[in-house]
Amino acid sequence: MTTDTITMDIHEILKRLPHRYPILLVDRVVELVKGERIRAIKNVSINEPFFLGHFPHRPVMPGVLILEAMAQAATLLALRSMDMVLDENSVVYFAGIDGARFKRPVEPGDQLVLEVTLGRAKAGIYKFAAKALVGDQVAAEAELMCTMRRIEA
Image (cartoon, rainbow, N blue to C red):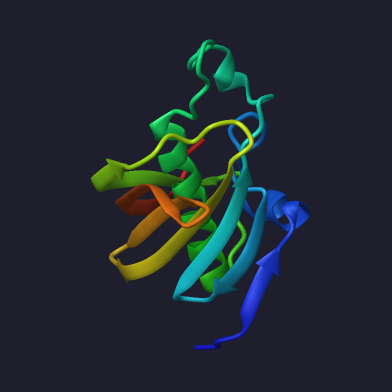
């Protein structure tokens, strides 16, 4: 296994993830080591559509979207580790979320740093340890399980 560090700009991310605005939640990959870990960034802007209703008087990024951002980073790690690009007949789904904890709110202007480590890959199920940080503070953490499936037309 190589220990070369890989980075990805938004153009590379768009090639690898099927997500698009407003649900694409990874802006840049600053470090990826195949089969091991990824460090990615989500810049949180007041222009995000979810802030209109969550909450108008005190905008906070929904926890489920923080989990989704971590899952998207995990997907990038898994796909890049296998040198794979999804086609229109493949999708990556959540298979489980364990131990999710939210430690601080994520607000407009924050930069969410997504740190994900691949724990294991067995029988098509990938298990990751994931953290979302703002500065040096943990905003959320969870164990994520994902699986890749073919879509039957």
